[in-house]
Amino acid sequence: MSSQDRALFHQLHPMKLAVDWLTAAATLVLFWRHELLVGLVVAFVPSIVLSVAMIKGWLDLTWLADSRAGRYLKWHMTKPVEAVRFGGFFLALAGAWWHHPVLIVVGTVVILAAWFAGLLPLRARKRIEL
Image (cartoon, rainbow, N blue to C red; front, top):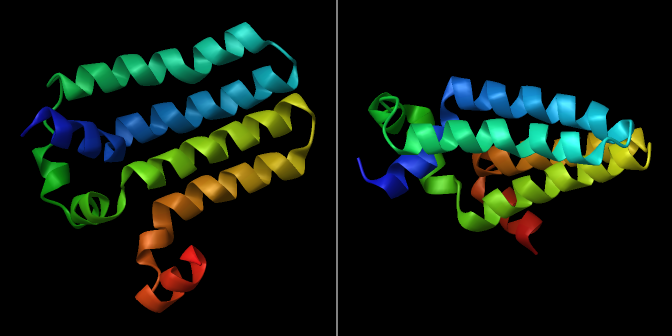
């Protein structure tokens, strides 16, 4: 498996998803308290360390590549979709910083929509892109 494939499929690993969602929740709490530096460290360091380890070959990811979810990810998770996910995270962080829970919810919905938009029928996806 190439490094590029590993970089894609590691996003689907249960350990990576757990670390990302748990650190995101902790980061929202820290941003709510205006603890910027600690919040940024919690937001990015664990995820980056785990990503590097996984991409360098620490875990076997071939089972993810061969799965139905892996095929979906290969087809759907483009760089623009990843950018939308990242944007949703920053929207949620802004909501926490400014104490606007609605922005946190909207940011979370953006992240989930980016993950699952590829499951919509093709017609619905075309309407969304307009």
